[in-house]
Image (spheres, rainbow, N blue to C red):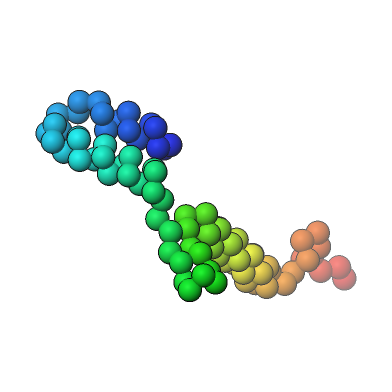
Amino acid sequence: MRNKEVLVAVNRNHGWHFGFQIKMTFLLQTMMTNPPVIHFLGYLIIDRHLFVKFISDTVTYLVVLIQFKTSSYSRTPVNATNEVFD
């Protein structure tokens, strides 16, 4: 969900306590204006984009490894037949 859609969903009355809705709206607005960022001595900045890139690269690497693993199991040619000609 996008941030505005989340705010709209929170602002709708779904039987939640009104104080809870106000706190959730305030929390979501704070997170949208001040996204979480970690600085490591000015050399490395970890933000949401870097974290998502790390996760997507890891998943891509695992998919490639799994493909190599499954391709090593099938050693018979795909277009060959197993018939014996006498």
